[in-house]
Structures are given as C-alpha cells and as structure tokens.
Length: 404
Image (tube, rainbow, N blue to C red; front, side, top):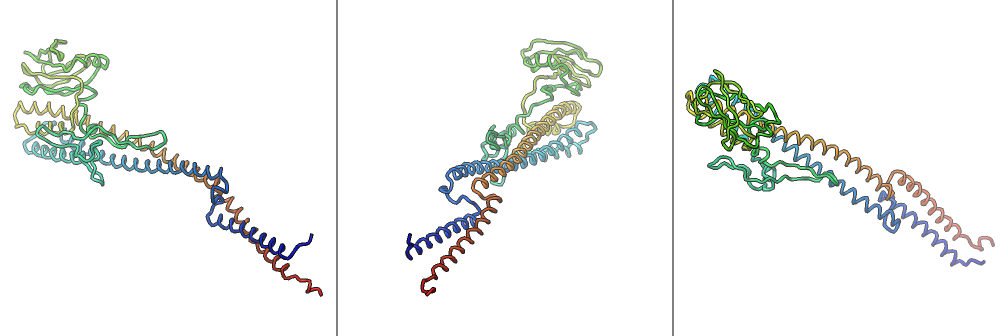
C-alpha cells in the first residue's frame, strides 16, 4: 500500500500526541502524589475512597471528642482535689475542736478558720470555666449553682450531666452535678445517722455509732428514726418513728454501748432524766450545712451544758465531713475510670486512623509502591516521547533527491 506524505505526517503527529498525553498523565499523578486523579479513572476505587474518607473523618471527630472529654475530666478532677483538701483542713480543725481542753482563744481561732474554709469551698463549688460557664451547675451553666440565703446555702442548678461521644457506640459523662458533689451528701456513716437532743442537760456524749448486724438494721431502718429517751438512774426506752416501744435497758455508771435493731451506739458520761438520743437511716445534707453546723456549735458560749452540746454536734459534723470527703473520692475514682477508658479509646482510634489512611493511600495509589512504579513509568514515557520525536524528525528529512 502506498503511504502518502500527508498520511505519514498525520500518523506520526498522532503517535507523538498520544505519547505526550500519557506522559502528562503520569506527570500529573506524580505531582498530585496519587494515581487516581478523577472518578472516571476508576469508579470503584473512587467510591471506595469516598467511603473511607467519611470513616476517617468520623474517627477524627471521635479523637477530638476524646481529647475534649479528657480535658474536661482532668480539669474537674483538679477542682475536686482542691475541694477535698479544703474539707480535710476543715475536718482537722473539727477534730481539734472536739479534742477537749479548748480555751476561748482556741475556739475563736478554729471558728475563724472554719468560716474561711466554708467560703473557700463555696468558691470551688461555684467555679466557672474560661467561657464563664459554671462547671457544677448541671445544664443551667449560666446560673450560679450555690447561693446563700436566710436559710443557708441552696443549690440553684439542676441534676443535668453533660456527656461526650468517644466512640461509635460509647458515650461517657464528662461533668458532675453540684448537688451530687456538695449537696446530696448522706449523713452519718454506712447508712446510719445519729444525734443528741438539743435540749439535753446531762453529760452524755456520743462516742461511736456502728451497724453491727446489717440484716437486722436493714429490716429495722424503715421504722426509723428511733428515739432513745432516758429516765432516772440511766434507764432508757427505745421507740420507733410511730412512738411504739421497741426496747429498754439501763446504762452503767459512766455510760456504755446501747445495742438495738442491729445498731450499737456508744456514749460516755451520764444522761439526765429526759435527755434523748436519736438514730435512723442516713438523711441528705449539703456539706455547707455541715460546716454551718460546726460553726454554730463553736459559736456557743462556754458552759458545762454547752460543752456537751458542742461535743455531740461536732461528733455528727465529723461523720458528715467524712461522708462528704468520701463522695469527692468516689467522684475522683469515677473520673479515673473514665480517663482510663478514654486513653484506651484514643489508642484504638489512632491505630484505626492509621489503618484507614493506609487503605486510602492504597486505593487512590498514593502509597510508596505505586509512587515508585509511577516514577519508573515517567522515565519510560519521557524516553518514548523523545524517541518518537527524534524518529519523526529523521524520517521527515528524508527525500528521494538525497539519492539522485
């Protein structure tokens, strides 16, 4: 078949253009650091990339949530440590006040310290974050949670607890209600609350209160609070909340333990006729009311009767402050567990992110192996284009007149 000059030029240019187009494709792939430049190159791979990218973004959001949750919990723990330290100092001063040998100067000093510690604790409970939101107000973050009025300190927040999603199917609490931490604190110890009558005139003071039989107390608690009323010569009767008599007994010369309904109450001193003690299941009382109780006890003027009343009040305060400290320790323990879970989720999330990123690189062809192949392809295409151009130039110069 005879090939015309026009056909030769057209075919040669078409071949060179094709080679240059392939070279440009490889150059663009290397420049973009990925083999897949458009969905039309590989629709299946393009669809897979979209799905993987969505999964990666969701994983990145979980990692951000985890970091935010960790920051919130660690910040909260710092405030709980501060509150616990304040309560520990208050408890130390209460123990000193109840230790006996307290002169007027000592009493006034402890009284001043307790007032300052109460205000310091309230400042912690009303802590605001960097945005001016109250940390322990529940969902009502724009309202001061603890406010003092004529009846004492009241909680104005709510029971809301903020949460954060740290995994596809895992949500954790990242805050605490102020009422849980500082307001709704069980009185007494181990579910048992004890107290002495405010009108007592004898020398009987509380020294111990223990649940000795959990099963018996569990059955009897519903009928409390119980009242122990003393008669002449240390005789006493025990009545339930409806006034029904459930037990009697007589104290020794200088007090002793009273055992009733699975509970043992230790007293020292001698009660006067008509004095009373009470015991029952724990109530709820704010730590601020407990500190106010201690302050009121230490504000009483010095006298024999007031000394006994103060000792009994401080015994209750001691138990209630320990209960408040246990609540803070309980919250800190919960924070520790949550932080451990977040750290585990973060480690798993980072590993998952690396795996997804690696899979995306493989799908779009941006992995090292593909880039190495494309580098070789670029060299080959460059050589092919150059060879085609040189061949075209040499053949184009040929003429029959060169042989005449």
